[in-house]
Image (tube, rainbow, N blue to C red; front, side, top):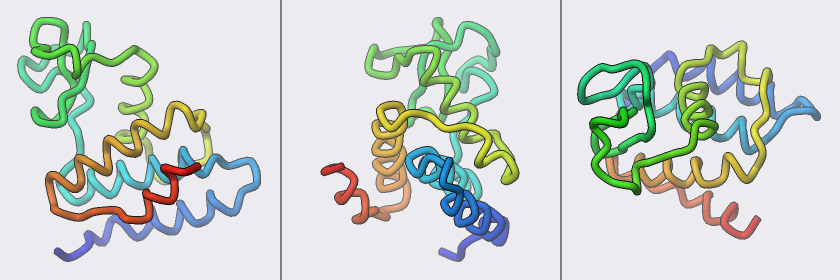
Amino acid sequence: GEEPRELYPWLEGTMNALEDPKGSAWTIALIYLAQSLRLSGYGLAVDGCVVCGRKTDIVGISYDEGGYLCRNDIRSDLDRRDARTLKIIRYIFRLSVSDISRIAFSPEECRPLLFELASYLGEMTGIALHSLSLLEKA
C-alpha cells in the first residue's frame, strides 16, 4: 500500500543517525522497522497488557495478540521475555524521531528482535525483507 507520510521524517532521521560514527546500525535498523510497523498500523501495544489493560507485571509479548502480556494473561512460555527485552521493545515503539541517536543497544539484543519484527511484518503484510539475509551472516 501507500507509505504513510509520517514515515518520511523517520527515514531522514534514520539516515542522519547512520552518518553518526557513534551510532549503532543495529539499533537504528530496529527502531526504523518498529516505527515503520507502527506508522503502517501494525505497531505493537506496549503501554499495558493487550488482554486486560494492566500496566504492571508485564512479562511477555505476543505478536499474535498484538503487544504486551501480563503475568495473568500470558499463555505460552514462548511469549515470555526478560525485563530488558521488554524495555527495548517499548522504547523502539514509543520514541520520537529526535531520540533515534540517544541510545544504542548491543547487536546481541537487537538481532533477535529485528528478525522477530521482520517475521511479524511478513505475517501481517506478506512483505519479506530479503536484505535481512545479509545480516544472518553477520
